[in-house]
Length: 430
Image (tube, rainbow, N blue to C red; front, side, top):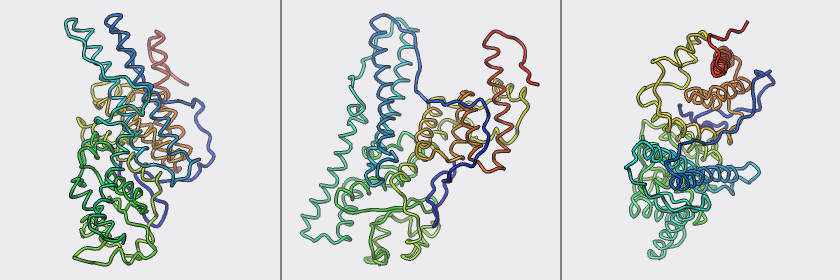
């Protein structure tokens, strides 16, 4: 998925924000589908079954609770300024961690069933709710407390300097604590598991959006409002001020804008290098929901990259380039030439896409990509639904590309159901 820059129009991240869909007749087989995380494994013994199923249920409940709390946090009934970026991202991490732990538990139980002499691995402590689930050794409340402690360190630094509360001095103290004392740095992250807020706080290394979120959260605790916008491949932040000229005033070789955002604004290869106090006012300020969306879009991209690692360069929309006949489509799906994708990473990408759809339900390109991931995951019924709905939102030319593929995918689903009932031969529709 390619990132789309912000211009003086609606802020976009990986997908274009669209308005309400125009009226179009959808395919008649569409039904409402609720995505759930589920799996099953056979027990080894009554005791192991009790222990194992208890933890499997615990992980499922935590994942479900994390999704609900995330949805509540970014609810459109809430004021955007009241959304906690940290909590929203930690709920994302908790759901994904519960999903991964669930799969590890299933794998462990399968290994026990295959090898009778393998000892039962120790189970982690049980939790009553998602708030008690440890993420890299700390609960969600613990990581929120970590941000509180960073803000207190900045306050202590200001007291030790015996200086006033001029904005430039406060930002200098924040930068000293974050980048010198804590060692936080912006890096090009290729590992999807290093793209969560708690991993950034624990390792000190992460992408631009995570660094920006930490900066925004720390400043919020100090009473400073930080705003931001997507510029090219960068996400830039700056303190809200009625005098933007002061952000670009150079002192000691750097402007305040450069100090906050790093060297990217001084890099002539970056679109951010062309910004001035005038052009800054023309940027669309990202809302808290936009920022959460950017983080989710990054997760989708990275998880998909991990899932398709063995087929480097595979695009989500590759199957749409050549619409095969139904027979060719069945053959390509069940044949040896089907792309080999990592199932866990693919499911994590789908989960991130589900959350982003909560934020952007009318985003046709996001729904198309979500439907294609379901197709790759062999969830043909859900893929047909998502791609069919996408056609109601998409421009006419995009709908024309999707329509024959969706029709043939629907026939494939019917044929799979036909064969599952014990019938032989190919189902034909006249």
